[in-house]
Amino acid sequence: MNHTDPDERWLGAVVHGAFFVLLGSSFVRFLSRDQGGARTGWTVALYAFFCLLYVLGHLLAPPPRPGLPPTRRHLLWLGSVTAVWVVLLVLAPSATWCVMPLLFAGLHALPPRIAVPAAAVLTALVVLSEIRVADGPLNPNMVVAPPAVAAVATAVLVHLQRQGARQRVLIEDLVRTRHELAATERRAGVLAERQRLSAEIHDTLAQELSSQRMLLQAAERVWGTDQEAAREHVTAAAEITSRSIAEARRFVHDLAPADLAERSLTQALGELARRASGPGLTVEFRLDGEQGPLPERVAAALLRIAQGALANVREHAAATRAALTLTWLEDQVSLDIADNGRGFEQTAEPEAFRSTTRGHGLPAMRIRARQAGGTLTVESAPGEGTVVSAAVPLVVKEPAL
Image (cartoon, rainbow, N blue to C red; front, side, top):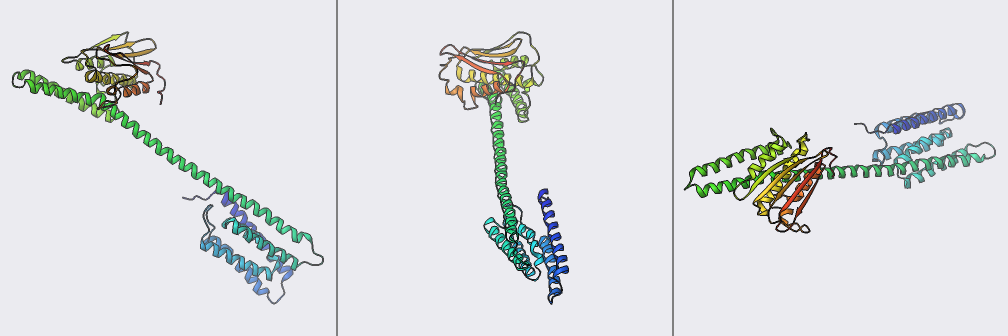
């Protein structure tokens, strides 16, 4: 891939053009005014060698890219072409102004601490050459003009060089910042996916495995006395296993819960209440209002919240009754999960509710409600049970991050 700056190519073309124009004009001036001496042939050959060396240098020893140190080959070329110019200047003072492209090449390739003294030496040689060939009284412009032009050129080129260095530093900082931001976004994505998977496992697989264990333990207890009841428990455990497999496949692919694949949210909550009911706990489902359309992600979030809340009821509340209530209003849909368990102080949620051994408890439910564009509240008191309420506007806003 070619990374050459178009402006650099344009500037290089101008400099090369200026060199050949100045070299051609100085050669014509030499032929018209300075030829005739014994060294004319050597001078013409030196002009040709000087031109050839300049061309070969830019082909075989190009200047370094901005921000990189010059190569040994380029430094050797720069020293050689400058030495040839000095000899040519002695033989043909007409070659004086060919130094300008060389001045640019030196400033472009060398660091300022070396380029500026080198420019001063070349300028001094130009002034001495002008004085040497001057006829009559010394023209002050011959002494003042070359240093003035060289000073302006040096100042401009050094400024551009330093400005380019600052821009390169800024670009490097921006690139590094972009890479760091991309890495941060990747880490955030990984953490979000881990959180999603942990919440899914807590709300589905962990509960189903717990139910399977209880059913198999019940089957083991009655296996010798009531094989019919034991077979019923094993059959129920097998059904739970099938649902768990379907749930695992769906949340791995980030799909809706299996209960919502062929059911509405109302039907899924009713089925959840039926499955959650068992020895020692009765769960009822009620629907208030007329059911309407609901975005799939909102329905999935409410179902997961209900699953997580019932997991807490079964494992921590010591409740005998619980109720799921889905309420449809004009502007929002709400889900309440109430139980008659032991409850807790609102100012200090029990550790079991904040982070269970199988998941993230209430924090996971709050995240689900927020991602659906709604809110989740908890009301409880010691000995008076707990009510978990999730409310989602029917005109769903973007979830808060």
